[in-house]
Image (cartoon, rainbow, N blue to C red):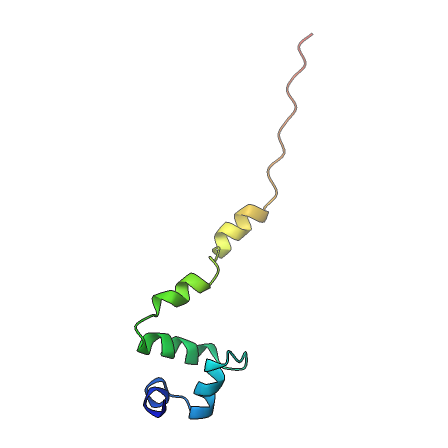
Length: 73
């Protein structure tokens, strides 16, 4: 455990907290642990798909108003 903790740059108590799923451990420590285990791609699967700011603005922008069709008499 000490060797793995040194590889990912955390103390032994932090590694134990990670094993217990403590929410106080910084995400960078989780990323380092996944990298050391060659499982960094698992992190991408856990994160939600993000929408670009441009896509978000397009989705929230009001649509232009359409003109009424002329009446046929």
